[in-house]
Figure (cartoon, rainbow, N blue to C red):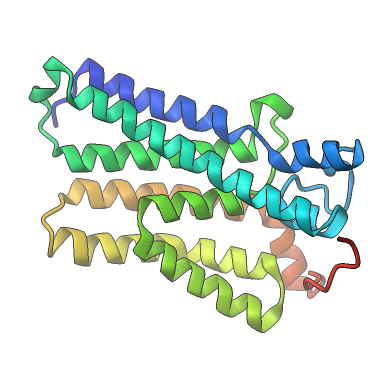
Length: 237
């Protein structure tokens, strides 16, 4: 695989912009606007949509979801733009990788970096949320087929148990399997993508899955002890 400076800079730029955008935490911003308080000092202490729903209300939670989703959209689009510009640079013709795969790599790197930025934001002392919405956005933007499989898994478990953490943890754990099966059996065997691309996508999925499971380790402990609380109807608007 031959690399050159424009491609390398595009990939590094994708990671950097993804991380910096991911650090914009809408749970913290909106809670401060609504209550003049830090969401990390309320409820579970998590700077994410679920804690905003429980501690602040439905509208701030919805706005948090939208903001966290859109920042990943922006990261992925910018990552693709950087790679598009690199591929159209005069020296980019020496790269022995398909343009489609390079654009895909840029999407994955930008999206994954956005998830890392959400969980460990440089702007807020590296104390952010648990990355569920950011990760869901990344999956949706990189592979809609995998996203559907993850959503079905999440939705089925949530409807059954009404516990967001259980549904999120299970969906995150199965994400690498879904990503590998679809990229290998569809993209590699049927559409001619390289094995290297399949390996890259699977490794990113394993990384994101492991990261989400790591930040949910306290939830996993409570689930094992039967102490995790289900979502109930909020009394706040």
